[in-house]
Length: 298
Ligand SMILES: C[S@@+](CC[C@H](N)C(=O)[O-])C[C@H]1O[C@@H](n2cnc3c(N)ncnc32)[C@H](O)[C@@H]1O
Image 1 (cartoon, protein in one colour):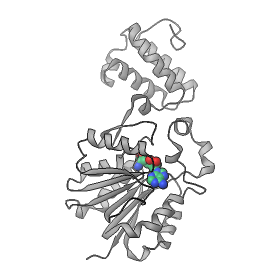
Image 2 (cartoon, helix red, strand yellow):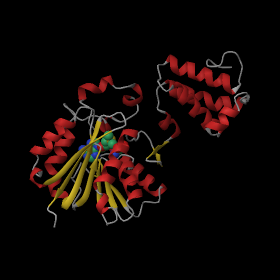
Image 3 (cartoon, helix red, strand yellow):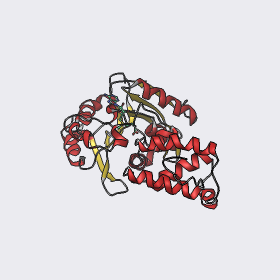
Image 4 (cartoon, helix red, strand yellow):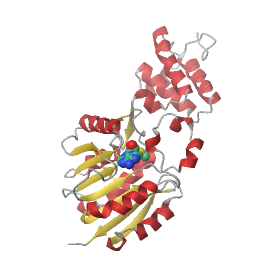
């Protein structure tokens, strides 16, 4: 029948095992999970139903739908990219080749921002998301902060189109706008909360990334220049012109970059305005987010 199920045994259990073995042979760490997700996708059933139907025999049609998906995963295309969607902050997001697939680590930024603005969460906060990609950061924050509105900018017009689509799908298009901008180049108003998950991989490390990342996420979303810090430096050099009298700035950063970024913040033009700063670890305990509060406390 196929390379993956050579015994011509199309029982779900056998197919699942065959897929897992094929994925493991490509050193895909989530082989069992990925096999399950592809099966659920083709069979339109949830995890529990899948477990209850282990002896079900897949039809020829189901097998022929499954095979190209297996081939794509074997070429290391991420599951989210195969499905064209993913979940972030428990919300559905469309994804495509124009920008980074939202990562679970980035949820640390959402939680951190909500914590920092907690005393102002019911006010009409204006939010700016620099390098918005799918729009996942801005839209997740807007889903939590009901009186807030925001802007997402990206250098890539394709990412802006995708973010607009995500805003519409989530019913947040009336509180968000997205446009092309080279960081602040087309931004011309102050914001209360500025967030960014910029590209931060040092250029020399790009060749060491997993195929799932380097072959599918665009280089513009990954490459942070020589030390990986160039986007942070640019944003920190310019952010003073775009903050309201009391404002918060939060960055996601790469593992081990936090101290260098804190030094950049201390040397930045707005350093004297900082009233408070904090760091936030991801689920693995790695410092993933740096947040500063700046304020004249008017
Ligand atoms: C790491 S991705 C983050 C995407 C999304 N915010 C997320 O967290 O999933 C960085 C994003 O920054 C954008 N970007 C890169 N350089 C930029 C620039 N000079 N100005 C604006 N956006 C830029 C990329 O196109 C990409 O969408």
